Length: 207
Ligand code: DX5
Ligand code: ZN
Image (cartoon, rainbow, N blue to C red; front, top):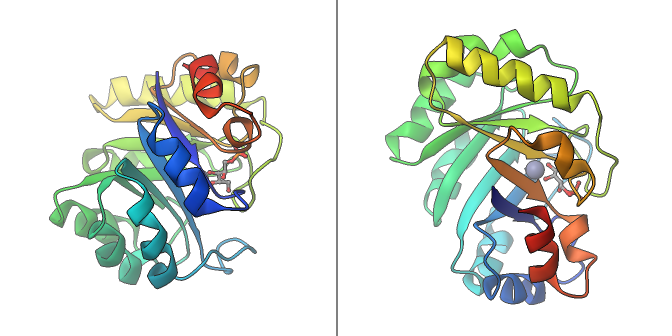
């Protein structure tokens, strides 16, 4: 299991990124919010870019924005493994193609209330499905238990359409709820890891 650590709820991102750099977390999960797609808003790209110098980890960028087009080139310039947009956002196909132009992996996120069939048209363009196990917008929420069957459904769909996309689960993942995500490839976790005394121990518990 790969682990992607989210620092959305960090009170000191620079410090936490330095500590996480010494752990074996596979990725740093970067949540980006525009205040439209979700109520919350994250700091502007210019500010965020400054704190990325504290990490040499590959980034797993999650764009929770209505119109990702302008942000894609900006984030693609960083050390990115996955650049993810939402299936509920605008011009999905065009934006996935734009991500692929930068030769990075494209992710497609699906919110809890969205039907799995919505992702089907885009499967040939995606390398990762980000299954939201909380409503997008905030860290520290409780894991939605119907996610387990959703992961199963997505796994079946990927097989049916011969897609090699990996499955990542995002929101409320901890040492208990990870048991609902056995069929995933990547677990995104923020508050569970950052509320521990020892981040590496928490990461070990999730693997
Ligand atoms: C939710 C974000 C998640 C969140 C994960 O909108 O997309 O990435 O930060 O944090 P925890 O693990 O605290 O739910
Ligand atoms: Zn996220």
